Each structure stands twice: as structure tokens, then as C-alpha cells.
Length: 206
Image (cartoon, rainbow, N blue to C red; front, side, top):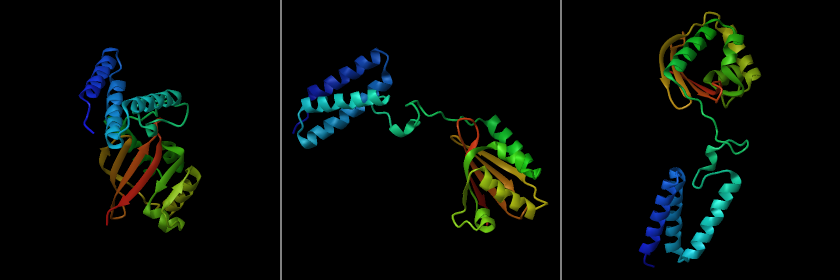
């Protein structure tokens, strides 16, 4: 089935109209959807009226869900249909967090370490396999991780970390440090919207 040039022209006109009325993001999403449905139409020989009808249904469903057409659902939080908030990791925040985190560990006081973490955070470490007999190497929640850290600190009364480097990402930080065991370590932190760690993973050099 040959492509109808008039259909393309209509799509472009609708896109321009949406841009002129101040909805460029919606216009781009609608253009992508139009192209998608046009491809389905060519493959299935679906009439343009059916295409428009299905697009209209899709837009209505988006409106009911509080989404913009073409917006991925997983970018939304589960509460109230509002956009999920992201935490912006700045260089200043990364440096401050690393300094405070290392000082807390070098104090050997879990009460100074734990405030950096969310209540239900997840910790992954080779040490969990060894000290907690947890084959997956994963613990969840402050109570479980605190018990692990207390055992580790008791076994290493001379523990002292020394900062080597800091790396930043999207909602994440990696801290490279000398663990004082003859091996270096890299710890990865993922932050929630409040700047608290919700997931951490420890990596050791060989």
C-alpha cells in the first residue's frame, strides 16, 4: 500500500499548530505516535479513520492517567501521578558527603554512619557473605545493616579509611578509598530525593 503524502502533511500541520500554541513537548510526542500508527497502518492496511480513532482513545487514556502522550509510565512515581523527584548530585554535595561519610566510619560509631542512609536502604557487600553467612551478600534496612557493621567494626578496631577519589553520576556517587586492609575499595551510593542513600554496593580490589 502506497503512503499517502497528504497524511504526512496533516501530521506536520498539527505539529506546527501545537508548537505555536505552546505545547512543543506534546507536539513531539504526538508526531512520534503518528509515525508509529502510520507504520502500523501500512503493515495492517488499517484505514486512517481507525488510526485516528485509536489515537484519540490513547490520548483519552493518557488524560485519565495524568500522563502526556508518549510519556513513559516508569518515569512517574506511584503516588498521585506526579513526576518522580530526582536528587541532583553536585560536586560540592559529593565532596561533603564523602568527607562526612569517611569521618563517620573512622569514628567507629554506627550512630554517625547510619544518618546518611534511608530507613529501608539496601546494602550489598562481599563482607556480608563472609560475616553474616548471607550468600546473596545483600541486607535491607538499618537494623540488619547496623548489626553487620557492628560485627565488622568489632573485628577491626584499628579500621581507618583514606579517601582516594570521588566520582559523580545521576543520583549516584562512587567513593574510592584505601580500606586499610591492603586492598582498595570503591563504594557506590544511590540517593533518594531527600539526599539519603537508598542503595549501596561495595567493591574490593583483588
